Length: 525
Image 1 (cartoon, one colour):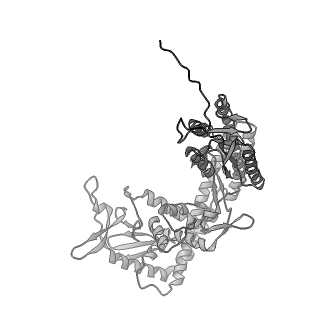
Image 2 (cartoon, rainbow, N blue to C red; image 1 turned 60 degrees about the horizontal axis):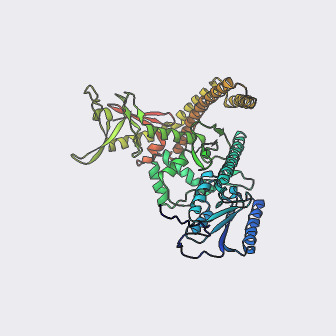
Image 3 (spheres, rainbow, N blue to C red; image 1 turned 180 degrees about the vertical axis):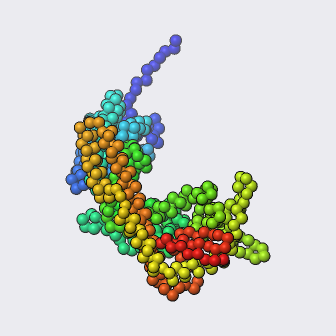
C-alpha cells in the first residue's frame, strides 16, 4: 500500500461563483440584508423602516463585513417568492457572485414556505453563500443548520396555513352577513362612494347596457366585442382590447341586475394561491338587491335564456335537435307549421341569386327516407310579409295590449303558495337553526334538507315571477315601439325582427307571426 498524505480541509469563505481554487479569499465578506413586512398598514410600514435602518447599522459596524445592499419587499406575502421583486433580485446577485452572506430577521421573514426556504438555502449553499437568521441564531453553513431550519420552516408554514384559514373564516362570516367585497377598479359600470358603497358610473353603464341589448338584438359575443373595439370603447381595465370572453363574463354577471353571488371561487392551496371555480365544494351566498341595478332583472333573465338556447340549440316539435345562431334576423325564429322543424337559410343561384328559407326536414331526409314538403320561402317574400305583420300590429295593438296585460296580472293575482318574502323568512330561520346546530356539533341532516327544499321552492317561485316580468317587459317594449311608429313603417328593418317577433310559423297558404307581447297576426301568401 502506498503512503497516504492527508490534505486538511479548510472552511471556504465567500461566494465561489467565478472564483478559481487558487484565487485568494477576500478579507471582508460582502453582506446583504433582506427584510420584509407582510402588509401595507401604517404600523407595519414603521416596522419596515426600522428593519432597513437596523441592517444598515449592523453591517457597517462590523469591520469584516462590506455592504452589498439592502433588499426589502414591502407589503408582499411570504408564502411564495414569485411576486417578491427584491428577494428575486437578491438571489440573482448571489448567483452573479456579488454577495457572500445574507442576513435576515427570521425564517418567517425569509419564507413561510418550507419548500421555497430549503430550496434557496441549498442553492445558495452550493455556491458558498450563507444565510444568517438573527432570531433563531442559525447560520446555514453550520452542521446543525439544516436540521434546525427544516423544523423552523415547517413551523412557519403551519403559521401561514393557520393565518390563511383565519382569513377564510373571516370571509365566510362576511358572506353570511351579506357583505359584498368587490374590486371596483376593474368592474365596468360601477365605482364606490365615500362610504364604500357601489354606485353606478353613468358613462360605463352605457357600455354595459349596449352589450346586453346588442346581444338581445341578435349580435354574437364576438360581434359585440369587435364593435366595441372599433368604437374605441374602454374595458373595465381601461383598455380597448375587447374579446368575446370578456363580453361573456359581463352578460353572465348577476351584479348588473343588483344582486351578488358570493364565493364563486375559492383557494385550494394557500401556498400557490391557486383558485378554482366553486362547483358546490364550498357554500355560496346569494345577496339580492345589494346595490343599484344597471340592467332590469327581466332583461338579464332574457339574456341568460338566450345564452343557453344558443349554446344548447333547440329541440323542435318533431323531435330534432338543431343548432342555432344569431347570424340572421330570422335565425331560430322561423318554424314549419306542418312538421314543427326549424327553417334554415340557403342560397339559390338559378335563375338569379336569392336567399331561400327552407324546412330543415325538407333539406334532410328522415331515417325512413321521408321529407317535409312544406313550401320554401324566398327571403324577399318573408321580409315583405314581416313588414305587413308589423304594420298590422301597429293598427290593432291598443286593445290587444290591454287584454294581454290583464291576463298576466290575473295569473299573478291567482297564483297560490308562499311569496318570495315568506320563503325568505323561512329560509332565514332554517339557516340560523343550521348554524346553531353546526356550532353545537348536533345532527344537521334534517335541517340541511329543509334548507335545500326551501331553496328549490324559492327558485321555482322566482322563475315564475321572472317569466311574468319578462312578459310584462316585452309588452312594454312592443307598446313603446307602437307609440313611436303610429303611422306605420315603410322599410324592412332586421333589428325590428329581433326586437318584436318571437316566432314565425310557415303554413302552406299563410304565415303566422307571434309577437313578443303575445299577439298573433296572420299574413296570407
